[in-house]
Image (tube, rainbow, N blue to C red; front, side, top):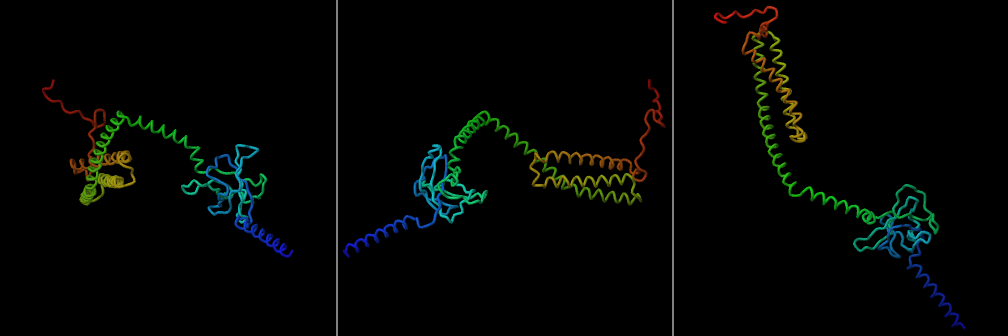
Length: 311
């Protein structure tokens, strides 16, 4: 009888040890909560006992994968998650894939939109809606992307046919010639601008000597000095424009160079008129420019004498 009692006690202890071992190695020793992830997408690669990760950390596993009896379009994924994980109403789920093995896992992330804790359990209040994964997005948009790429290739082939390539070659040749001419013109303009400061300094010195000889600044000298200053200003602006690396090339330079060239040309013509007047009538430096002879119908006009023998 004592032997039977000992045998029974041993059997009870052995059974308790077996249950304890199964509980320990089955991972049930950690306090968990149950949630249901709902998705309408495929769950290829996801299996029972698959990992559940929260921001990359393993926090649980997949317990069951079934179809929703109320809506067969939905797939219900039952997961257990450690109670230490802050699952909230703002928590979302995605399917992630491990390397190139194709093994899938559930990835939980918190958007922070609603920090209220999400209760675990079997009811609909414990459901987490699964978001589309990167593979789902690529799969959904893949057909549209391929169609757009195919249309692009067809249009590219039409654009780059033999006739259009010949047209492009002609345009490039003309553009190269135009650019070469423009660069040559800019080079000549740079050379001219390099000579301008010395010429203007020499002219300023000449005007200063003329003013000293005249004993005062006459209107003609004042006009000449103002024109020299304006020429120097426009010359500096053109030189700065040509040296500006952010100007955008010859095409962008052309309108501004045209405007500054017009100002430079106008000032040069006025200065040339003043200098020609000083050359032809040096006395105008003191007495001012000679008065224009009155024309027919104006006061003081006298007709030229008639030539003898004229009919």
